[in-house]
Structures are given as structure tokens and as C-alpha cells.
Image 1 (cartoon, rainbow, N blue to C red):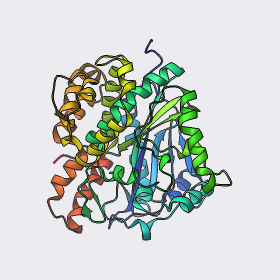
Image 2 (cartoon, one colour; image 1 turned 90 degrees about the vertical axis):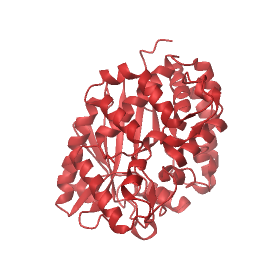
Image 3 (spheres, rainbow, N blue to C red; image 1 turned 45 degrees about the vertical axis):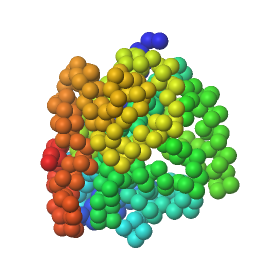
Image 4 (cartoon, helix red, strand yellow; image 1 turned 120 degrees about the vertical axis):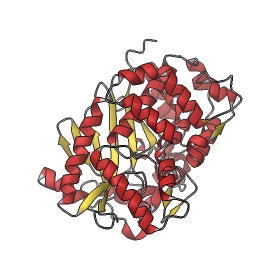
Length: 412
């Protein structure tokens, strides 16, 4: 199959926390920021090809491209400019933007304020069913990467590649090592909560790794029909649609011919997010082109085995040991009895060196630095030390806020 239809349309959504400049406590002022731009209360405002919006929690603001773009690197500078504009407006209210996927000491039970405007019926329905006061709902900031397709066959090939790569993503993207004022022992605490925050209706999240479905008809039958069935007793008014409920690590959006990857923690600045996205897409393209393995081998990867590797990566990040030769074979590494996730990523980055170099904007150098230093969680842990107190948390996270404002990597 021609690959011309894939890797031609991209979208990125970045979620950041609004926090008080003096204390770094969460600041539930997203509606004021959006009102300041739009001239009235709204949950989304477009700014050319970019947009700002809010979803669920009032201390979270999202930046994204409102229309697909043909290349990812072009978004790095545009996203940084939007960050700087929000920082300027937040400063008027004594607030700043804070990166990373979880606030390290927020108490979600006392500090969560849900969006009270516009789509509030949706959020209140979610809250009634799942209780959105917990960390897994109101203290989770992520990067969503959207990849387009145009045909059913293209969807199937892209979905197979994404399923195969999902278990490795926490190993490069984890940025949430702390919650409730302490290190958790999980490099990706956000995904640890994400896996479990909808246990009342387990099928909504499934095993995070999507099922082996490779056509729109199969997706409808195997996933969306079951979602509608399982939510019906809890949502008799039909407020929540299956397409919104689906919380797998990658979700099909047939309404816009895209697959949305949702397991990426937000990084310290847009350059870091875009650089990881370029690396991820380079590897996905290699999979779709069958550079390391046949598409049928990728489709045959069982969800249970992929989910096991994923959970290990959520906990241990780049130090996760992968001893499944069939899985390593998907990336041309079946000659190794075992590899760490970090070693595998470095091998993949080397295989994709031409694509990374061609991306420009310092992408290749940024990727190399991040792979050498480890995911952001690892860098944060090194900076915090073994038993950080609240003041040390403030010092490190204030430095992270400065990295975001200046568009620089956090190095340790």
C-alpha cells in the first residue's frame, strides 16, 4: 500500500497548569484568561491556526493547532509563542504557567473547580458518575498527538503501528514522578492514575492498549457498541457519547479521520513535546513502511502482552527491561535477548537519524539530549533529591516554569 496518505496531517494539544506566581498553588482562572482574549466567556478561542481551550478543570488551559498542519516541526515556534502570550495574560492576575503532567502537591479533593460554563452538563455528568475530584481527573496534564489517515486500510496500518509503539511511550515521555508532596515510585504517575480512574466502568479505558481492530466497522462493533452499552445505565439522558468516553491510550476519531495518541505526559516546553512527537512519528512511519517488521506481525501483537510492557514502562520508564523477543522483533531487535526501553529508543533514534536531522529546528539535538538524560521524570527526581521537602519542590518546579516560559529544556 502506498504510504502517501499517512503522515501528511498532524495536530498537537498541550495542557498546562495555571498556578499562583508566589506559591505555585493551582490557580483556577482559565475562564478569565479565555474571556480576556475572546471578550466573553467561552471554552475555546481560535487565534489563526492556533487555539486555546479548557477541558474539565479550571486551572488547566490547553494550546493546540485548530487545523491539521503538514509538518510537526513548524508547530514548535508557534506553540511557544502561544505559551508566552498566555504567560503575559496570566501575569496580569498573579499567575504563571507550569508544565509537567501532575501538580506535585495539589489536593484535588479541596482544590478542584470544574468548568462551570458552556459544556458544563458534560463535565457534571462525568463528575456524577466517576467523581472527578481525584488526581486521575483534575490533576493530569498531557500532550495529545493527532495523526491523520484517509482510507480504511490506512487506518488499519496506522493503528497497528501505534498499538505496537504505545508501550514504549512512557519511557520517553514520563513527567509525573510526584504527587501529594512526595515521590511516588512511579515515573509516570499520571498514567498510573489514568489506568484506574474509571474502574466503575472498566471497558472505557480497557487495558489502555487498544484492541486488535483494524477497520472502522470492527472498531464500531468491538469498541463503540460496547461503550454505549456499558454507559447506558449510568447516563440515561445520553449526555456522554462513545467517542468522548473512549479512554484508550490511542483513540480513533473517524469524524476527523485521525488517531489521537493520549499517553504522552506534557513536557517542560513545546520544543521538547514537538521533538518527541517527531521521533514518535519517524518510528511509526518506519513501522508502517515495514522497515523492521511486516504489518501482519504488528497486527498480531496481543493486547495483553503489550499492556504488560506498558505497565512496566509506566513504573520504571527508560529502565524497563524488555525480554520479549517477539516484541523486540517488531523493531528489528530480536537478536537481543533483552534490552531496556532506553536502549531500544536510542537504537530507534539512530535508525531514524536521517528523518530527525531533516526536521530542522534543533529537533535531532533535542531528541539526543532527552534520550541521553532520560525522561523528564528522571531529571526531576535527580534535581529533587531523595527526600525533598515542600521548599525543594517549589525550587525545582519554579525552574520548570522558567523552562516553559523561555522554551528551554530542563537539564540535570
